[in-house]
Image (cartoon, rainbow, N blue to C red):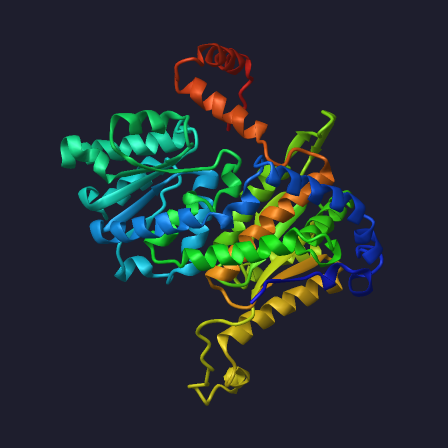
Length: 459
């Protein structure tokens, strides 16, 4: 079963000549797309870029599978400590591929506290026995403030319960050599998995970052990676007119040139709603750049927005249909739901319900999606659809690889560095300075002087 990208509603014959694109508009980008693909393949073959070959890591998949079995036997709860790319992918995997109410009945219970809200973290302690909980710390550097602080918060309670054996309830996923977590692991015999140096955080869901929590919860990671491998092969083919990653990137690039600087992802399924959260980081952090590859100031990128069908038909869609025409919408559609019983009208005296008899909730949600699609198209609002034959490990693996490769194509078309994040680093440095981290004294002084000069306007 293969994902399909339906881009009918951006073609001018369907959308109109003012907002629609010609096929030739996309075809004109093929020579540039070919060069981008050659560069991606070259960087991959030189091991400078790693995300495309992650599905080949068979030994890692086997190692994680064996480790996950031991975790399930030993622990009642699993707490995943990470932020950004170290959490959004794992969360999307859990919510896409587990029963939505998994934690009510199954063990180990899975928790992903990806923020440093002290009340939120404290509430989690009420629902776990830390002595029977595995805390998985995910950070390439080990120094990310939020991850380090959350780890330190929970280690206090581990030490109270387990004393000098507290480390037995820790698992690290970090850099192969460097970083602060490795310093701890050299003092205590803590199990460590590795994040490849050539895979950035937002591209890391198919590394140990996402695979460990998935395997612990019982997700078939072999199928996940098989789907990713299948899509990687499709996305590396030279016939770019049949390459969904290139087509997705080209469409968004062309609409950016038309001033559509908002990219909405709208899943019509609660199971895959968190794929939109994952996409938001991938697209924003990769493409939102101040300078291009020649160091010209371009301030480029698209603002990603998440929505949920049908829920947001009753909140956001009014804006999308009649508001500023500055968006491109990507629907995620599930063609076949696992459970889809026909309805019947149990209140015969209300004939207004009769039209629902014999229909299914799956029919309703997908017809609601089509209705939104029609309304957008009739109002010349570009929209495309990624279709899932079913939601399973294979198709979720395909989705991750498709969007990661599309992001790489989009960065190439924009002529920016897709894989760095200088804006994020600036914020990290400011955080370290404000919190008094050693080595950041000068930066702290600069910030405090800046704050002193700031004029305040508060009501």
